[in-house]
Amino acid sequence: PGDDPRSHDRRKVFSVTPVPSAADPTGYLYVVLRGEEYDLAESMVHSNRLLQLGAGALAVSLFVGLLAGLVFFRLLTRRLSRLTERVESFERGMSPERAAAVAGKGDDIDYLAARFDQMAQRIVAQLDLLKHKDAQRRQLVAQVSHDLRTPLASIQGYIEALRMKQDTLAAEERARFLDVALTESHRLGRLVEELFELAALDAREKQPKTEPFVVAELLHDVVQKHQPEAERAGVALSIVSVAPVQVLADIAMTERVLDNLISNALSHSPKDTEITLGVVEQAGGAQITVADAGPGIDDEHLEHVFEPFYQAAGASRTGHAGLGLAIAQRMVTLQQGKLSVRNADGAVFSVWLPLARDSSVAGGEKSTAL
View 1: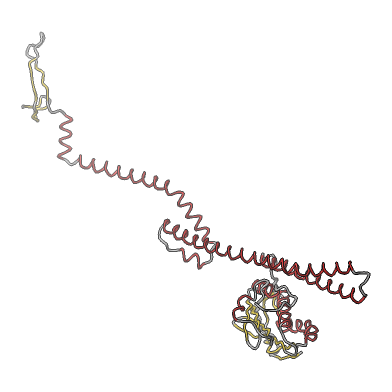
View 2: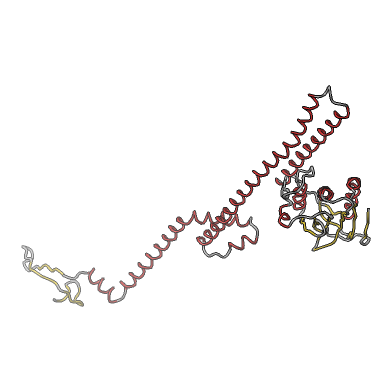
């Protein structure tokens, strides 16, 4: 080692050999073993510069890697996020109770898992409901076939008898045959109309046109309309305990409901008994009751009386198809009301309808016997 040939202030390890030439016989070749690059690296090590550069490079590498990871993760979860957005948009159309049951379930995966569980439960419930509806449909078709076949067979039988015996039958006998055939044709027409009406109500094709009206006035009109029928049956119709209230409902539908309930009560009331009707204010609505003095309904049959074509075991056919109460129940439901039945001294049907905003009517309660 010796002085650096390029600087007398530093010492370097070098190798030297004489290189004589014709012009300069005393020339030498110096080879420095540690050059400027080595000195620069050594100075960087001693000054922590290399550490700083390494830390900077590591930070840049981590940042680029994190950014690339986020982009890659976004690409992977983009479809999941879109699915979550679609589920959330569906949730906004659900009821608040069901939407609240799904909220707060964690991240998107937990949220979708909860929604899948709820969807699975709903599908199972819908399948059970479809099975039940299919069984009801089969039973309904069988009952409709039976109820249509009976009047058709009667009409056909009497017409064939008239055709075969028209020369030998007396005038009174021919008139009786025609009356029976006409009665059965009316029964058949009424059954077909009720079937169409029930189908329209189930499909919600028939919607109520609500307006405020006084229940007592409608009740008196309906009783007056059924008074001749009640007199022929030997049954009295009475209106008692009429509260002066207004309801928000469809007048025509409500009248049809009362017609069905009164006709049903007349069909099951013994002679020389009384059917009572009344109106009371209850739970923010008006409750209309129609009570007869008949044998009532067995407890096991109470929950089935509003089903189409339902007939209790041993019950006699009264000429009705068994659709009146089913139609009444659907009409009341469409008006945001409730129709129920219970047993007292006979069967008591109750119709609850919501009150109008201004439900007060001049006058007090009154009791009328017709």
